[in-house]
Image (cartoon, rainbow, N blue to C red; front, side):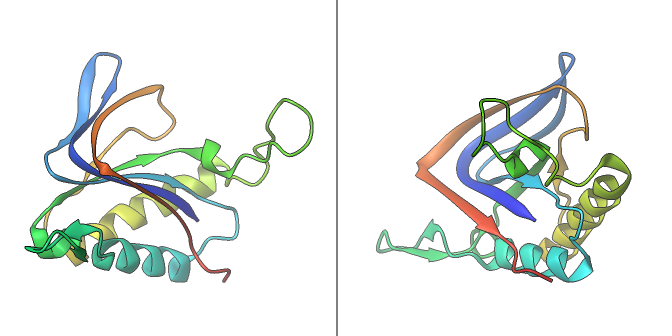
Length: 149
């Protein structure tokens, strides 16, 4: 599993002109799933995201988590995160899980985040052509891969 985590002051995702998910201050998480991802990968990533200390404390040091600051989370599925563009000019997406595998992983990941945070998690729409808007705070952007199962 690979995520791109962006600390934001606001973010939203729109599908065909309708907002499917919107948050204020918190994390925008772009999430890509690999065919070998499992419950352990999802659990590791969800816990890491909730506890990742990338919000400023009173001294301006990144020392607080999204949970500590009461922030919100928006998760958007993005299979292109697992693209391999090392050869040629057209990326290969064979490293991404196919929808029958990725959809249940995506839904389980969102549920785990909701349980850990104790609040709803906003989402995009799996497989849709989405428009994502964000106001990156910092900017702070982190790429995070789950450990191999």
